Length: 222
Picture 1 (cartoon, one colour):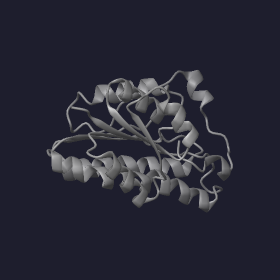
Picture 2 (cartoon, helix red, strand yellow; picture 1 turned 45 degrees about the horizontal axis):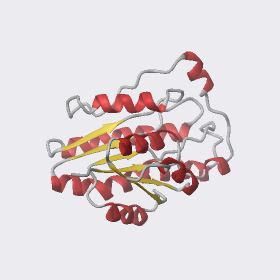
Picture 3 (cartoon, helix red, strand yellow; picture 1 turned 135 degrees about the vertical axis):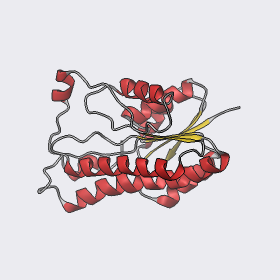
Picture 4 (spheres, one colour; picture 1 turned 30 degrees about the horizontal axis):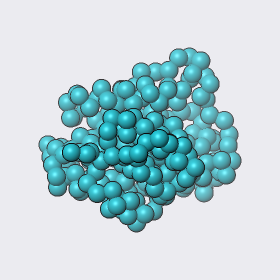
């Protein structure tokens, strides 16, 4: 029987690789992002991948995508943004955009998919906020909120057949290593909700330190 996965933030980075891996493993993949061109590149030569442009901050749009997808067995929610700016200098509009995308976007994805998983008694819900780094205060707050939200979901719905995972993706660590860590975590006890990802090399970590970007550079989730 074909398994269906929903991957958000699938136009680039972690989400794109997750979508490709699942498609290669014979999953029926619904790949979601705001970047239509990036989605097309992700889905290239993957006949079992279906792309949908969708803004995760719009709950109705997310619900429509899930309704189209049908029963979803796995969610990889990677539609997160992390613009860098000092906490006291970041424009409020940018802070609000980060929280709407990373926190409320996560809530919308969960509310659209988790009820069906609970009804069927099985499913995997994997949330992938960015790991907090110095100089990205709003993203750090959003990452902590998503991690706490994952714990709350597990506390409320443990023992009902759904696996919950939060993977705070470190900057500078290749996406393939992050996804490898997620795959390993799925074999561990259900109560271990937080994925341990091996750290990157010193060069990778130094190369990933945030630089100041304008709001125009960070409009769309990855």
